[in-house]
Image (cartoon, rainbow, N blue to C red; front, side):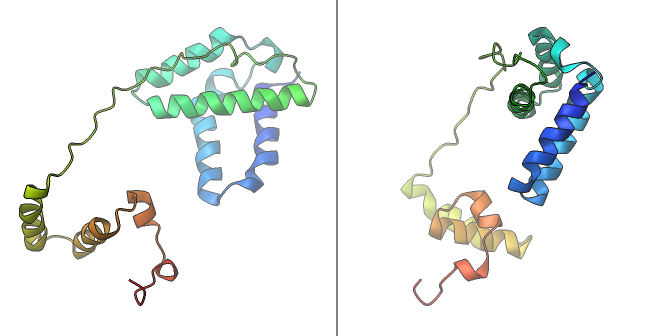
Length: 162
């Protein structure tokens, strides 16, 4: 019997070398927590689209819509691997287009030029964590994405060339 858990483990072992250590951990923990308890014991060929949909709905009920999307992608990849290795002949995830609920995006309001002096004054008087204040000032000068700012290295910053 080709259990889903066995194929997911094989797929993970094959793919993990392409990922950072953090991403490897996140991928396996998400599969272990969200997928294996529900379908890990099932034969890969017996898993139906309805099984996958039930799994996704359970994740959505927690409000974890981003996790649901990533799990769906990972499941599709495991099933592609199973097809390529001759363990099954179909991917039940393929029929689940547009099933994941989406959040209504709420964009943040733009800062108007006349509001800038008040923001700069508030930032100047900000008395909590100095690193937060410096990060906000740096962000206002460079307009980098928050993730780029958090992961920036000194070697990437050329003070001489401003």
